[in-house]
Length: 143
Picture (cartoon, rainbow, N blue to C red):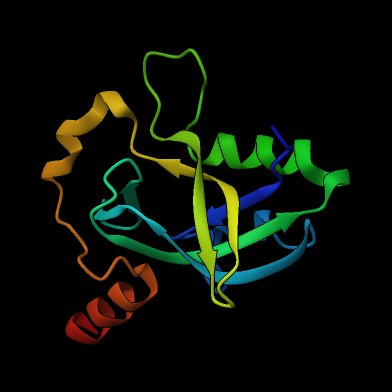
C-alpha cells in the first residue's frame, strides 16, 4: 500500500476555524473535498460516522508535508482523542476515499466515530454534511 499523507477534515480543523492552526505551515496543498459519511453535531464540533456511506460529508483535504508528517499527525491524534489500543477514544482514524472539488479521487486519513460508539448516532444529525453551513445557519438563528 502506498504511503498516504492526506488528511480529510470536516469541522473545526477546516480553514477559518479554531483548530486549523495545527495544519497551518504543515501542508503542501489543500482543496475542498467530499467523502461518504454521516455528520452529527456534538454541540461545538461535529462528529462523522464515515462507515455510514449513505450521505456526503463536505470538508477539505490537506496534503501534509512529509517532513512534518509525524509531528502533525501526533498533534491531530492528541486533539481528536485518538489513542490506538485504548478502551476510550473520542475518534478513530481511518482511511477513506475523498473526491476533490476538481474531481480527483484520493485516499485520506479522517477522524471518525469509533465503531464501538454507535450509540452516538442518536446525536442530532446535520443532513447537509457541511459544518461551515451548519454553524453559519446556527449563528444567524441565535445571533
